[in-house]
Image 1 (cartoon, helix red, strand yellow):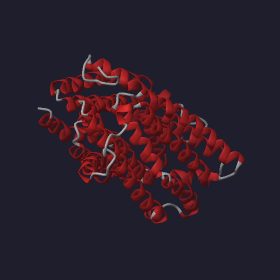
Image 2 (cartoon, helix red, strand yellow):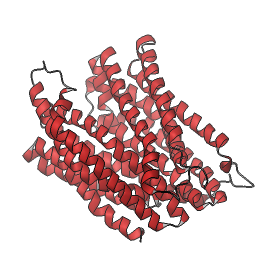
Image 3 (cartoon, rainbow, N blue to C red):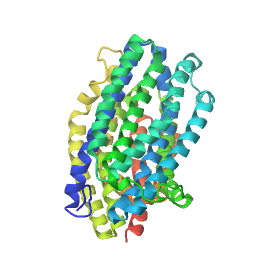
Image 4 (cartoon, rainbow, N blue to C red):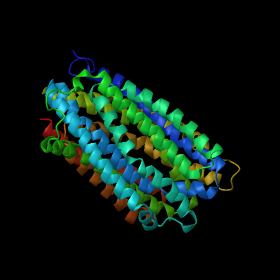
Length: 442
């Protein structure tokens, strides 16, 4: 068996082992996000931190699209690798890179050109508008690096290599924090320095992974005219990658609208949701990692033509996810107040209210994680089979559910409805994606 092949062996073991480095990457990214916010909040003005925070909606929607589309480029490579079709693999690899270039040019031009307009459109406070612009325009200028890194990440995983991206992510995270301190404390570049640190660290990671791919994987060395631009291959890559990017963005839109409703509930609700979302992201990391591993497993075995093994992989991942969620529920039910208290200064006047609401959110999320243990594996498997367009319907259902809760339920029932909206959203996604997965995996 070729190195990185997942077409034989116990599915649960392959998926679990493959997911561990991905989990480490996710945890490192979460640590960086927290450290980045702490550095800006500690050493710059409050307006600078607020301005950076005001960009999260645009950042989430646009950068999430670029990340999803970049990762999607690895799907056809995974399928051809599993099938052993080396010539097709190389054609998809190089045409995938051409698609990445086109996406990078278009998304960078659009985002940078309309950056200030979009900030005004999202009602960014005039007092922090310049801080927000200085930060997000640099992030958007670095979109080519975002797409490059995620495309290389997806292709490395297609070859069954989840370790290298994780090591690179770890080094990039340390490098990023170091550049944050250099640009903000020594060079006095403000929020633009924080953004530049992110762009440079991600750019370095992307370039390193691309060079590594070309040097360490002889299978990618082209023969004859395999590097030639082929519109048919580019079209297939777009068909798989762009829907993945759109799914990320569609989910983000629902979250942005929910945040608007939460803002109207007052400062306690906003603070509780902000803290609860950080805890939620940490809870999600293992499920995301197993889902990403399953996407690679599915892609290779789908390309190999072994649908029975694909179904075994899905079932194994769901079982592992449920077992993990039982542990999360135990933690959420017994330690939610302790977790909430880690993020709040007890001396603050309304600290008790914030902790109580945050603990409530954590308990609800703990229970609803069981739904996510089904949603994530099924959706990632559908994407791995090359049906990113169909998985997009699941994202649209989630967005619709979140918007409905935001507009009609949250204003009436308050923060409890915010907590329940998470479960309603996950259930909506399941009701759409499970029948789709059943049909295409038969």
